[in-house]
Image (cartoon, rainbow, N blue to C red; front, top):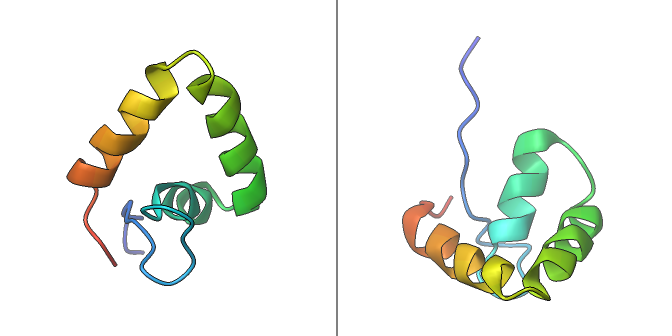
Length: 60
């Protein structure tokens, strides 16, 4: 079995596709990931991590 890889989504994205990629990787609804990321983003740390992830994660 091939190991899972974490990618940004190039088709189903709101900003950079990070949340969709994370949702596909852990096999849950992307809306849940987006809501959780938005809650973390209220502290400011989530926004920084989002853009770092957008730079590091390859596009599928």
